[in-house]
Image (cartoon, rainbow, N blue to C red):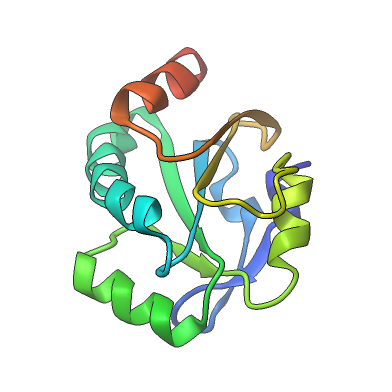
Length: 138
């Protein structure tokens, strides 16, 4: 799976493509507004993005949810990284990213600077988990 294969609308209904983030280490966090652990980890992801942006890290959220619910939540929590919405085929995208647990969320994957999927983690992620997943790639 390549970062280039991500083609999804963002919360403003603009189609986004993974090509725009090539050259960065990209953390893609699959989440949903109805998922408590997902909601709990987002403030940490916002902070992590702010701290690591200068080193070439980009966090991308992929919501498995309704566009309007995602937009409202993103605005409320102050999500300052791109929030894409898997309006259709979300389960298929999760499978392509290595999630074989029937679309269980949250699920986080890491792409290297060339856009290759290199690591993944099921379940709520911490800043320490992210450090272990991305530091060697930065």
